[in-house]
Amino acid sequence: MSDQPRPTSTAHPKRHWLWGGLAAAMAALLAACGVKPSVPPGSSAAAAGASSATSARAYRQDAAKHLYAQNTARIYQGRLPPMLYAVGTLEVNLGRKGEVRSLHWMRAPRHAPEVIKEIERTVRAAAPFPVASRLGYVTYTDTWLWDKSGKFQLDTLTEGQRDGM
Image (cartoon, rainbow, N blue to C red):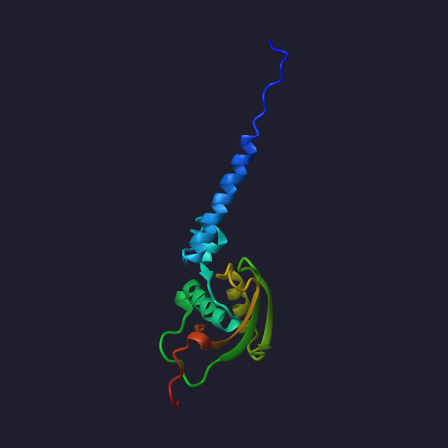
């Protein structure tokens, strides 16, 4: 055995800094070129996708498409009848990961409390919503158009209503 101290390598910590710096530079280069890094499968962003919306109004489109994708069998196909069972306007507050933080009724269909509960359940069940990568937290508002059949459309994606009775 030798009494001499073992040489310590200072290159090892420097290598980590070097690789970290190179990875950061590569990410910045890809971002500048408009290339998005891939999202690991199974993450909440992969499940719901990501939104590049720059305003709550633009994000509303992504949220409506997400709700439609989660509820394909419940979407009213075609133009809605002239008389709807319920109409309600709901404000949805989402967190940075697309989780529902809170719901606030701007105009609740009070004559149909079962519709209020079902809309709230539907929104919560659709989480996580697309991550608003440019906004972080986002609060958007949409109007729910509810047919007596239990099917619905959102005002953002509605096909309109038929004329007359």
